[in-house]
Image (cartoon, helix red, strand yellow):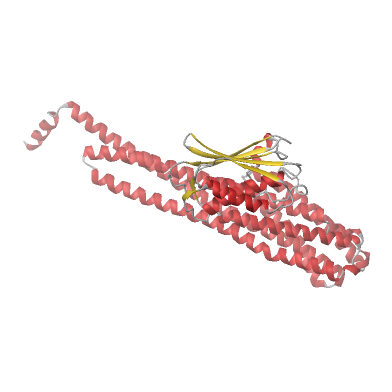
Length: 468
């Protein structure tokens, strides 16, 4: 009777509440399924990112090995040619063998990454040319005394071949770093999308489950997935810190050998100048110049890397006072020039004083540099509030640039003008973009060849905290 009564009471329920209850339960199940799928996709994306990070680390270490083997081969050849010592011959052989194995390892690690194939092909061509020149010089050294080496040894040490190998290594390394940055951005976007989906679905699921009597289960589920998201976010943050630390470590390790190259080359030029012919002096001067330039590139790369670790201290800034202080500083770089600075009213803005000073130093310093060919340099600084943004602009009447290359302006080590005419490493505008983006703003540029350029950046108005 009780069973029958239960059946009777179930059948006696109004049809609409039963349908609503069934829809709520079905909706809750669907929401949970969507959350599960989104979390699974995010987890897979993080796993893939971890695998890519390991491959990228191995790739950069292989490049480092290649650099070492290039140096070993050159040192071994020179030492054998001068001393006929078998130890130097073994050093040369190990370096030459390393060139082959390192190039093969790089190609194996770059499988599935089409954008690396072009730079790797150029690197392979440069390494083969360098190895051929070294082999020719060693064959000559093995046949006779060091005086018989002739042009082969000079050619193996020629700055053009060596610079080609170094330039190709830098190009491959730069492309790998770009791919690593792109991968980190993709994972960050996937995590943000997953967080948005999960948050929205969990809210809807909680409402449905509460309506169906499952509020406790919904809270437990939301807590579990929230903990997973926090853990995944920490993994991503640790991955980015590892990449920054690796960049800093590699740059720092390169400083010592460069100082040694520059120092010993200088000793040869100063203490043994009488024993060197003009060609040897020229080669040593080229070595010193390139070592010093590489040192400056490393210093700029370290400064660029530090920006990712430095915390932003936001406070209201008197931008006009900051700009005038920077103008005083950049004017001292070339005191013999008559430069007209015209500073209009500049709205105050929120930001980190030290970092925004670096932005103004780069923009105004570039304006001073690229107006150097003008008999009368004019640099304008203006500011305005537009559509919720504070926009600042630096305009000059310098050499300008072609707008078809505007996409390269803010890239690391990208330069649109030849180094002999205008000094620099191509990091300044990349620093500007990184600093402005960390303040939640944007940066852009306009120009025409021989008609000047205008560089602008915008900061969010109000007290909105910039992203860390």
